[in-house]
Each structure stands twice: as structure tokens, then as C-alpha cells.
Length: 175
Image (tube, rainbow, N blue to C red; front, side):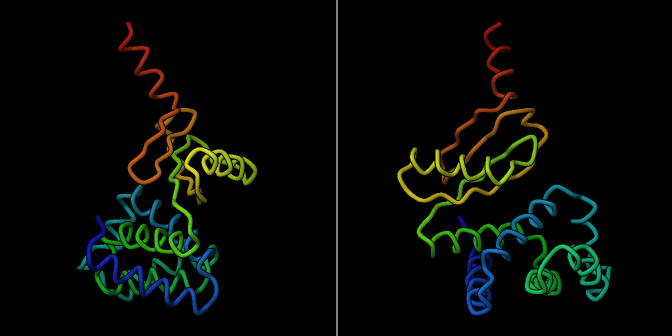
């Protein structure tokens, strides 16, 4: 369940990006940043430390994102950091991603893969999932080496685990 603050931020982000006409790009950039943030204790510590001045934390965001992300994305992350909500960033971003998907009539399929998937692989996966679930699906890939191989897909509460890790676990159980 999305918290009230996360939902309010997500709705505001949606309004801003809709006006600017770049919600698809910003959504993708924010999703990637949120996953990097979740996966890095060092980044979490640097951006959440109240002893570090807000201007310094915002500079860290600009240094990390300026060359790889739109000005809108940099501004949004800076705002979240400055407002002291950086620990809520993944929840805010996930709520925003869901809001964008809702607007387009699709659902989010979060895919964990040991390696990055090519655009062609993502398109084929989206087509297969669309056929399987009966509606539009937006694929969001998270590179997770612990998967070992294959993929783990989650759409809402449904998890499809086709990972090598799961298969190895099943083999261990069988022996």
C-alpha cells in the first residue's frame, strides 16, 4: 500500500511531467535512480544524512545525474532530497510509475534479470506478458545478479519465477 505522502508526491510528479510532456523519459530515469538508491548503502547514507547540508546533498544528486538524466529528473530528485524525503524515494517513484501506467491503461511488470535486457528482448517479453495477462504491460527491468540467470517477473501480486536460482533451489529440495 502506498503511503499518503508517496501518493501525493507521485500525483504532483505526474502533473509536472504531463505538462512538460516528458513523463515517459522521467519515469524511466526515476525508476533507474530509485533502484540504484535502493542498492547502494553508500548513496543512501550520503543523501539521507541530516548532518550533511541540504545544498551538499543536492550537489551529489546533480553530480550523479546531470550527464545522464533530464533536468526534470534532476530537479525532482533534488526536491525530494531537500524536503527530507529521500528515504521515501523508492516508494514515491514506484507510485509515480504506477500512476503513469494507469494513465496509459497498462500495468507494470517488474522484471529481475541477472543481465540487462535488450530493447528487443523487452518488447518480446512485454508481448508475451500482454498475451498472458490480457492487457497492456510496461516492462521495468532491474538488474539483479542474485537471479543467476532467467528472470523473475512481478505484476501486481503475481510472481512468475523463471530464475536459475529458483531451479537450483528446487533441485536441492529434490535431493
